[in-house]
Amino acid sequence: MVNKEIADIFHAIADILEIQGENAFRVRAYRRASQLLENTPENAAELLVAGKHLPGIGHDLAQKILEFSRTGSLGDYEKLKHAVPAGLLDIVRIPGVGPKRTKLFYDKLGIADIAALEQAAHNHRLRALAGIKDKTEEHILEGIALIRQGSGRILLAEADEIAAEIRQELSLVPGVRESAVAGSVRRRRETVHDIDILVAAARPPAVIDALPRLRACAEIIAQGPTKISLRTHRGFPVDIRVVVPECFGAALVYFTGSPAHNVRLRELAKRRGLKINEYGVFAEGREQPLAAASEEAVYQAVDLPWIAPELREDQGEMEQAAAGNLPRLITAADIRADTHVHSQWSDGRQSIRAMAQALQARGCEYMVIADHSQSLGIARGLKPDDLRRQMDEIRQLNKQLKNFRILCGAEVDITAGGNLDFEDTVLRELDVVLAAVHSGFRQPQEQLTQRIVHALEHPYVDILVHPTGRLLGERAGYALDFERILSAARRTHTALEINASPKRLDLDGAHCRLAKQAGVKLVIGTDSHDTAQCAHMELGVGIARRGGLEAADVLNCLPCEQFLQKLRT
DNA sequence: GCCGTTTTCGGCCCGACTGTTTTCAGTCG
Image (cartoon, rainbow, N blue to C red; front, side, top):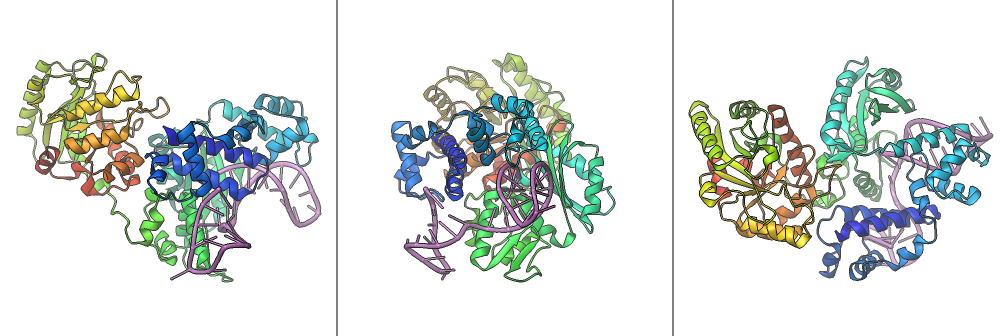
């Protein structure tokens, strides 16, 4: 993906410029552009050629994007790369070491990679430098150890669990009035690198003092009167900020971010002679805030409606809010069905009846049973005869269940050759046909794309599930021309799935945005293999919200009959 | 390097915590 490559280069340029002590705002421009490209699924060069303006990409950066797109490299970057040793870019990522110290170590001690820095810290050679003593040396060694153990990102679902445990315990701490999850967990990022929790209490320092005793706390990283950073037993960082209840809303805005959204919000306030910080919105020279208690009040103070956390990424939500065009985002309550459910018939762990009861208890009106097809042996894929017997069972169950309907479906493999794993005579009997790639991930982009497009063109295929095939933290999605997938889905009236399994979350928010723009229908399915996983629907809804989707964009917000009708037209 | 109902030049969000310091630089989010 070209955008990703340019984003990486801009990121590296920002690091190098920072180490060189360049203008911080120039650095920020590269970082912002890098982030923007990262979140733009369309080819940025093509957008620029088409005359589209990308916020934060001015004349110079646009030229660089075009240059890279044309030639596959960037002259300025190639020059810059040789200006500093590559190892400095690793050093600057060590927690506790920033650009200033990286430069200091290199200039004074010739340290050019992490190994050399580690050696120097061990031998106490760093403390000869101005502003460095034993504590800093220790912190640097800890930071290096953290990097080594791969302080990676954690799945959103895991972060939710940890956050829930901590909040449960916080509710028992004397003086705590209220707590809320903030940061990227609240924004429903698919993976996060830490957990942020905001607490309201009349006397913040008293609460902070109690927090080192939390069961989740294995180690204190930093502690002040209003903020504590700790590490859980699994090495996961948690930031807890305690504020008085009067400024809970302002603190929640600040602590939820994203950083880019906050910057935009504060810039907007500043242009109006206001200042926004975590304590409120302030008019110049005034001590009493104009707004602070609720998020709504903070946004209102700069004439904006409240913006849902999932949209706070500086991806156009400020402009939409100002124009009164914010979407009415889908909520979990809008969902009437789970469109992707497995059972014991293939690799699920429970009966169809158990899955139906679990979903009905969660407020669903229908579900699609989608067990695997025959070629997926590892998942005990169903032969046509098995499938027909399963359909008999479903028909029996439908007679027994009240106010709930089970639709007969199958997760049919798109074989490496691009064919479907069941004959048309079998597919015709199903209510819903889900198509999926489970093999041949390494095929070249053209072949994989064509293979999927071919499946989408099949008259019986209703939904393409986990469309990009990514597994978070394990494997990137396969090589796909997503725009071709979208246009094929649009042309053939095939829906794309937002797979809500915690490791997939596939499509992601950016893809959803594109799908909506392209007029492609979407569904959210949990891919549940047992009843507990039915709860993952909420993760899928979070992704849909990040993509700006409304209930009308998601087919399983419709009653069953309308769902079936829409699926086919 | 970007950007414009103060500006095409001169701004560019804001504060907490740490370690090393007697008032602040560096880092982080």
